[in-house]
Length: 199
Image: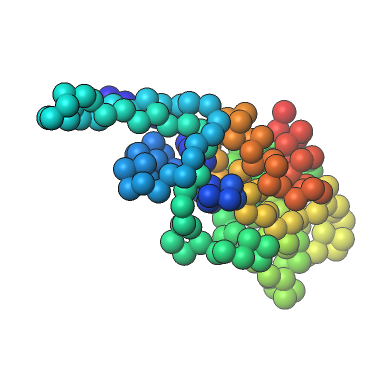
């Protein structure tokens, strides 16, 4: 049975990152004629059926990055105004699995989403008001602002750009995919510093 460990980075024809796809979706995009070009390293050689007339077997080589015509259905075309959906696993990855109060690294199961300005004090549940916190620090802070609880944030929360969010969603991001995504990060992206935290 064929096992595919790596995701393929899909972009639009202009090279703007759109999403991660698995090898099956990439083959489907090739079959539909939607792939404009491919770059990066070759990941897979997928063999298909044998043509009854020619006797030749079809072959698709899949690279780590494919550019496609058109956009993903429902994708926002205004890249500057894009706000990614907030979820805990992506938040924890944004903050490098560190509690932004005590500075210790934890497993995802030991972390929680903390609202810097608590919801009970008119805080909102968005990227700019949430940080990763260990359960102990989150319980200690409770319904208070950090300064009210005598705590200090180690880094400011921020909303990831589209390219940053795609990176955060990735599993086992390859070096060429990372280089491609980094070129699309905002120049002063906090992710640059947080990547060092993951080392």
